Image (cartoon, rainbow, N blue to C red):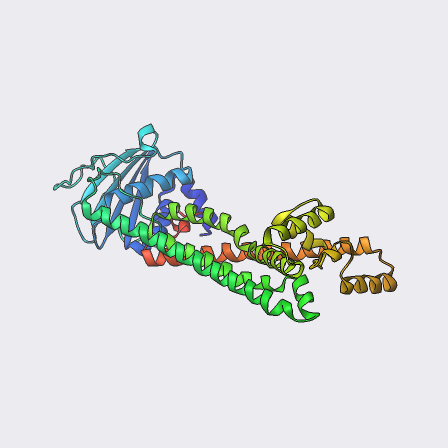
Length: 388
């Protein structure tokens, strides 16, 4: 039968389709379910090599029916058996239309019975093993919780510390890699005559963002193994959002600082005086100052003045390049500068997009690894009765 047909029949309350979906999700747990429907009442018999967990089965079946929107079912009776057993281990009855049943299970589970169920409950003989597929997460038990012990609190504290430690290590390693690559570029690659200017113009060192954000995303994803999944994902996603622009700005910050220091050395000025003069230059060019002004300036003008006398003139190399382009294709210097600016913003946008995709992809891989390490079920398996 086609999966879409199974879901359609299950919504209509067909017992065979409901049993097929349930057994598809429960096969990895070694539990099989036999379903019978009479009017608005459904009886599900769960059997397993070990005793089926009562709280899990009630959550699984009731939430699955609500997700399927099987509105014809109003009352659910669930019975647990051991394979080959003749007496039920437990029995639970839930009224789906009762407001209290939508989010909470009964606090007191039904007592175990030592006698066979009454004939009023239809078809409660142990079922044959039905067919089908995929697992889902056990929903936490709603039984009364015991107060936390000292040992449990220590374990919780240890897991939180491990979460913070692994997250901190990931951030530190990613930041260190980014810093080292930027320093390598500024002190070596970009210092090469002519070629260095070209490589600086396309900010080639930003290619290493793939490595930086792969480390960051994977590490923060794995760190979620130590605390509740939903909390770990939300916290580390926030960390990624905050760190993404910070790490990307490392290159601009270091290059700006190098420019200030080199200008100060050339003009025999203090760093403070150098910053004031360069800020005045940036403001005259683009009406912005500081690191932000420097970032905007380098997107439009490839050269930076290293002496006061260069404030009013183009760098010879830049001037020669513009003259050649103007002579060859007739592009005005202002138009050429605008074209360069568009290309630079395009390059920066490309690097940013690559960084975002890299960190998201590796964060997801880290979460999958955390799921396996912690033994928890991934999110696609948390939903009862998989959709087609």
